[in-house]
Image (tube, rainbow, N blue to C red; front, top):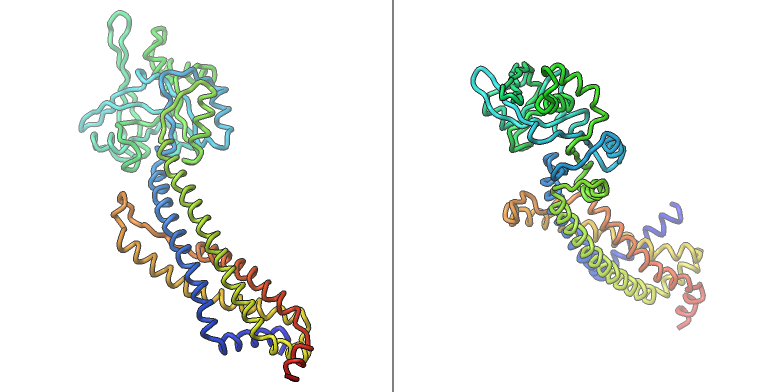
Length: 401
């Protein structure tokens, strides 16, 4: 048997012999760790679910431009290159972004929304396909793959009303909740063509408007943009970027900030409690280790006498602290699981409709276990330093008494 194994065995035997003291130390560790486990679980459960609810739909990351700001293609390209921006596409004037969608069963007025590669709502339609919101699809009873007619009309200066009918395929329908409006997502160039067709009286027909839109797409000045932050945490940064460009926006930034403030506040509270708990645990274990060394001075002297050196003797308090911490964390984990189940059973659905209040995970056990381990190590070092001063002469003096 190696000397290290012998020291570990001595630590176990000592804890068994002094089991009342050992049990008290285990309870101290469990009492400090269990509340921290439950607090971490509650923070992640509440904040995590609020964040998940906030990010459930891409619309929570959208910033809507207000008014009719001046937007150029270089501005769009600059925003696309920013890591905080997930998607951005130019937008035409709102008055020009409307149409009527028609199927054999009926028709409905819709708003036209520009889309492009990487659209968070849905992948870009293939070819000339369009994407309908769930609201629009239900009204006209459209389904994916169906051919519908997009009707775009304009009034000439002489009062003549002209209409163009564009047969197109429904490539997809947005899931319920993605948009509460009746919208059609289509390629941004078609939206520009619609604006040109309606506002430029020199354009003969929609085909000519589409040709002009493709030719001038990157040189036009737009009156807005459709932009999404990469995450809700990036909303503030993207808003600041847009303000620097003279673009005011509306978004769910305040909701995101509320979640962030709650997360930070709970994190600060837990950090303070963890510091107090770890300090108390370290002091308690240090006092216990010191007392153990004083009680075992004669025994430790005999261990030195039979051949253990100072460094090996110093391992005894460390092993005792490690064993106490492991057992205490095991009990704390069990208590944390029971508390986690009790909190979810008692309060789920009562706090703002949150389905889950506590979300205990192995990561929480690892964090608290690491904290308890560090506190135990610091306490054990005091015991080890006290044991290091004990030499073989202590045993001889005790024997002569």
